[in-house]
Image (tube, rainbow over all chains, first blue to last red):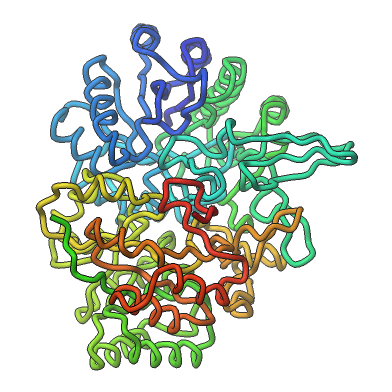
Length: 331
Length: 300
């Protein structure tokens, strides 16, 4: 089982390699990837340096080109594919069929991974892009239960990557326009959800309000710890109930499912968080490296280390973790 | 040159869970309405069962007899083996064209004749739209986030044969999840949801804490609270070469809305006048921001 870790910059990439990542996934500084945040991501020099560092240590570097090419600027995505092939990226992570077709035609040697943003929630979908573009790995949306993952694996020749840890999407990735409804920008169109430039904080007499564009996302009392106003983590009103209508601020953590996922044939575990710090990448990579090693040595004797869980809880959103959709009750 | 024939009207798939009798009655009205095409099938949640696959086929036959083009839409989220079984029955129905709303559906349809590339296939550029055309798509439905400028860019100087459809009326399907938000509101698990979504003919309103209507909970789907309405942009739609306007079923006024759209498309009624008359069916207002390249909830 491969460990796939995030890097938003060169120091994070080094941290991932040094702590045991097999694959490090990256993005370049524009809207071609789903973490298009100010100050984040790689320029040409840092990605070349990153590839050199990873390859020296026998690891791979992946490039996320996982947003949807936009009508007037499609060429930017095509150039990014050419660039990836040119600098020796080991695989690109793609969501759009048009972009996959371009890559498969122009750069047949360049490996393709189907991004989670490609919304492939069943084996027919994965087999379609395999048949047409020869993808070598597919990342499953974070909405499938363990049983459903098993059914996918049984019916596809493509390597399956599943999310292990990090921020949890409540909606099917690639199928959510909530952010653009409020702000005009979404992961599909601009590579970001609930963009920072649309965030406003308003201090009121008894509360701190967070807004995205004109929309009130949450209202924090004086004893509460304010969180970033990601739209689906807000508290809203339905009838007279005010509650987390979609999901609480929490992180996905599947450490306890590791032997099960390995047994099902999941071939890679993905850690979310290209927007997080090198310290986060180092800590999470180390915990998961240890866990995967323990699990491969003896899955029957595998137990989740208390220090692993404590370390992950420190960096989890809202300091809480969930098994998410892997556990059917979540739905 | 842009095609100046009037755009045709499509009745999109029913997105809510209505009692069986109500569904039958709705499609009897559809047969007498000025829509060219009617989409049928459960498009949101595979657990819903008031109207089953065979019932949809029977409704489709009646509509076809009354001169409508019938299209079966596949479900937006296909994750379980049961979902896949239903999807295979839809794609292999042998009678009606199918709208693919998932790559898996495309896998079963590609190269086997005509299909509709649905709005959830994320065709944001000519690159992907043209790919689906070569797989057999004779019509594509633009994703809601693509506005006039984006669609114009995709269609400019495009010489291949394919029809373009735009979501023109209704609460916007904004997101889909494996989690049921109606069940979550009721503190019920998805497996034992009790099908409470049948109590909400237009979904449940979600407001912000300062009481601004914002979204609609419809089981696995989240929609806008505001009703998207392009009635006053029909001239622009026509000029861009849009062939079809999708009207999404709502519990009230759908067929009045269709008649108003038809009058505007025929040049018999001004778009802004039609919009005014439709206010009564938009309790939380209209929106059209996406069309203008703005946040979707805005009205311009």
